[in-house]
Image (tube, rainbow, N blue to C red; front, side):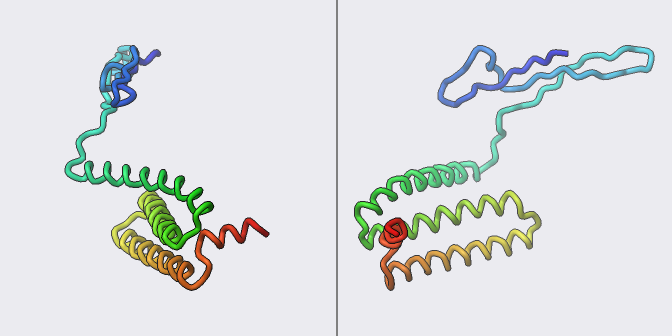
Length: 157
C-alpha cells in the first residue's frame, strides 16, 4: 500500500520542492468495519508544522541564536588565545567555556531528568557546578599562568 506524503516546505527560506507542497502528512489507513466486509481505506492527516507554543517560542528562538553565536565566538577565540595570550582573552575564554558547558549540560538535564523535584535539584546542581567552574577558571587566570598559556605549555611538552 503506497502512502502519499506531503510535507510542508523543507526550509522557511523559500525552498519548496515539487513533492513537498502541503503542510500535512496524508497516509491511508486500513479499517475493518464488519467481519464480512473487506478493509476500507480512510486517510488520516497528521500536521507536520509546529503549533504556536505561546510566548516562550520567541525566548527559545533567542536562546538558540545565542547558543550558535557563542559557538562561533568560541571558534574565533581559539586562534586568538594562541596568538594573543593576554588576560582579557583568558577571562573571555573562561566565561565563554563556562556558559557553553552550562547550556550544553542544561540540555542534557532537560532530556534525561524528569519529575519536578528532580529537575529543581538538577538545575540547582548545574548552577552550582557552573559557578564553581567559572570561579575556578578566574582563580586560575589570576593566580597562575592563565588558560591560554596553560594550554600552550601542555602542547609544548
